[in-house]
Image 1 (spheres, rainbow, N blue to C red):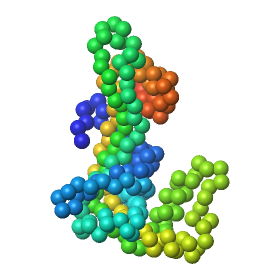
Image 2 (tube, rainbow, N blue to C red):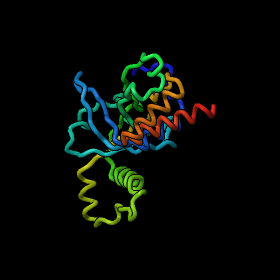
Image 3 (cartoon, one colour):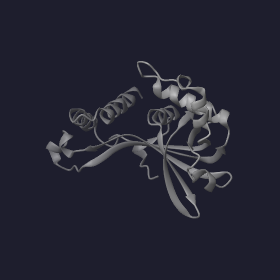
Image 4 (spheres, rainbow, N blue to C red):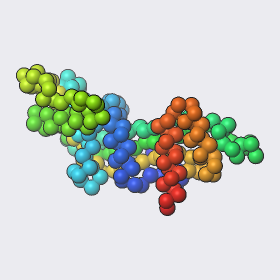
Length: 213
């Protein structure tokens, strides 16, 4: 991934936070020399390994797990907030007009060797943990135990687990760090006014982080 110095993100807490906030990753693998991509919701286990471990489950009918080689290296891409930036949002444009449109975004690339876990206990623990995480904001959180045990058992037979201990975690947070403070603030306000609060708030948070340094 091409990452200019301004946009490099090295803070492990920020990188892991982006994954937890955006758990639907794109798993990219090569099979017989052909790249393929799979959208999969992942659970990040930060206490497992130096960088953490990704765990997930897929349909047993999915040919992905049968095509994997032992200890095959894979890439998982997580996308955070993103949005188009208009030059008109920069106060500096009124002075020199030397501005062009751009796109701000947050992304994390996670790499590691994938392992297939054909283990009902592993899969049950994984879906229980991921469900608990995603249901936490709900007024009445759904639990795996809410469903009949026989039904859950039948569902478990139809899925299989995967696990990726992370060997590399690279982040790019392109939030206008190469711009003057007033231009960054102007772009953030423009995004917020447009209703794109997530990327706007990410930019404001980035400004606040800089001010603390």
